[in-house]
Image (cartoon, rainbow, N blue to C red):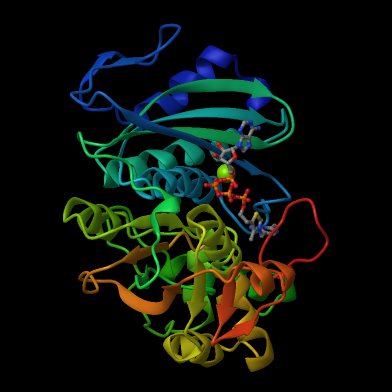
Length: 347
Ligand SMILES: Nc1ncnc2c1ncn2[C@@H]1O[C@H](COP(=O)(O)OP(=O)(O)O)[C@@H](O)[C@H]1O
Ligand SMILES: Cc1ncc(C[n+]2csc(CCOP(=O)(O)OP(=O)(O)O)c2C)c(N)n1
Ligand SMILES: [Mg+2]
């Protein structure tokens, strides 16, 4: 059965049972807006889209994968401010000839991802059209100030938690046909913990494809470090380490130096998983969508994180001219490194 064989209300009836409600829901999904009671007087809010063809391919990713990923990439944005994801809304456009199971699986994947944080999927929109998912997250700052990307100061350690380059390697394996898309056996089962410990080598090609299909941002580690007050600047890495580090450096008006020795295990890990060495470094430095967290701290490295570089004074003259702000072992990195939807230069 295709989605065009159902009414909108029937489709909503099919997906609703898979969607948890936010704690503190006062008016659930079903009216013009949902209403959530929050103790916090500030919330963090952000939205991100997944567009078929640009972010996923239906022959590689199931509806479950796409729903999971839509929630996780937004959860990472909330956590990257120090906010716990409490509620998601999903605006979906689905082609009429899409199997209705795809839509139900999307809801199931999104629902399961939301449950990891005790969050709800408290509304959205459903329309017929090109396959696109726009998901919004509301994050609870629990009375703490948000952790901005502009807070880095010279002398801070540059720290990271999560994986680097795995998603790009997974995309590479799928594109080249080296890995069959249905490597579902290694995907984290419903309710399972993150497969993304720091610096660990992937078990094999399937493990990196799994991160591409179902990223698992270490939200708990980010929130714990923020709650302990140890983080000065924080962001999630969605467009690649160098590109995102440059955003942090620019916002903070500092220089950031990434330590090649610290990333050697990441490069070696991808090589072990079957990536050619000459590609592996570019994936670690420029691959996006791992949704690990990049931060700076003046203190010791929090549990579960590791140091990957340092923050230094900006030398305005040569930094800006040379593509600016971020160096790799003291040397310049090419400005195009990383993902940009609107430019040709991509990793
Ligand atoms: N269409 C838009 N309208 C308004 N603000 C936008 C739009 N697209 C992006 N932004 C804002 O620009 C900033 C950068 O966006 P983006 O690169 O997507 O961030 P992220 O990597 O955290 O998802 C964010 O603050 C975002 O809210
Ligand atoms: C089919 C396919 N081709 C290419 C990519 C690679 N890709 C698409 S978007 C992106 C970067 C992150 O996406 P964006 O929409 O910029 O997320 P944001 O920074 O807003 O969180 C990457 C690496 C992909 N995920 N899937
Ligand atoms: Mg975005």
